[in-house]
Length: 606
Image (cartoon, rainbow, N blue to C red; front, side, top):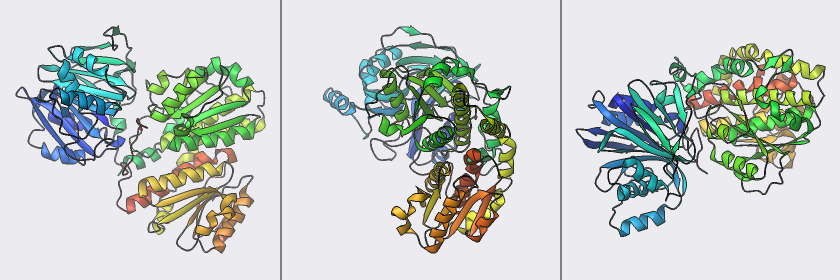
């Protein structure tokens, strides 16, 4: 969850802080920087936002520096405070380290280091790293880092600088993302590409076990035994400007309005001659054709997109789709073989629980198909096949366009499976045509933003919500509840509507509104009956429906609608509505939806 930045070359303090700001979306509780100034380490760090740090450095922002590292911390060991913030130093403040991950054996290492005279000042697991490096350092920083890393257990990405090496950043990666680049005048390392795009689009995605040095003259990568490794550069097509707010109040709002173009990018080149074209998985065709069961693992929003995929595909052909949350699946004993396909869904490709699920499935000989948004991510590298979302960078912590593009790409995969199984028909052809027209229809949904805002503001002061849906509308209810609680901090729960009478209906009353997912589909009348049950308990009722359901206004207090469309595709059309509803409530309450409390974009620890 933490963010790492390191820059070396022709840079200023302002460049370092600006790069750190590009990682704020990951979620954090403290921030810090270290840079060389007059051949000494200058360190500033504090609990709270990068903005506070920037204020403390205001007199130095224009100053040129040869090298610097920076960090946003999300606390795991030690409470969020100034002392526990990164960077951390050795005993003599000659070297410093920033770290993402968890050192599982830090207590044992700390005890050993204290026994030989090292002095610790923080409660973090990270602080053992600079002291270990200090213990091994003579004059070769790379060798000292290599020896230290061999003793670390757990997950980590680290960047190290030393006053004796003013043009060198050294680091290592195991289980946490780290990327490096070398531009014309500046080289850098970071937790993702966003802070580095200003300097180059050619990125090197480090792999587990890599140890590296980087400067503005180049880089080298080694394994833990000191043997050189070759890593290819990958060209990232995102522009630096793409990651800016472009005039929107928040990244989240910008990214919701980017959904039509993101879906167009996901669809691009993937429909040819009225069929789905996914050449990336051609080698999987025979296995998919003969499979009766698919396994899917994901977390959070990705798991709800996966659940929509389950309803979608099981409605179209004779196959079972098992969806499990990665944090539970990774501790199971799955009965897999070489014919089992595990689909792993993760926007970042760095979700720790999903990666561990993949490793478990691989150990049981399963084939791994990744669905991710990040080229070069760990998930992409550790999978046999990958389908990329092509959604562009998503800065806001809350998933919006990545959720929509996950739905679209999973639906494309589902239609390909239907075709391979010989069950293509007029209905699936209509769905494919509907997918092609989605960018235009999503634009129409977004044109109703003002109406969504007006309804949202009517409900901003309620403390509880219940979302309900049936069939393929149920995952939309789950995602709607998640969006509301994660950015507005209002308690929201979601149920399959038919389950109301089995307990949840006891919650309802005038202070407990219900948000019903109720388009005209095969279960529309069933959902209407459930809505009537809610009204009988005097609950306020919001209906999210389709334009051809005028009768729902007789039941609901407020109605939000989308274009009448193919019923299997309503989850995509309704996504912007549930996202905007949550966004407008959060914004009206004065919360920052881009950086919700206690959350992070990439959950890279368990």
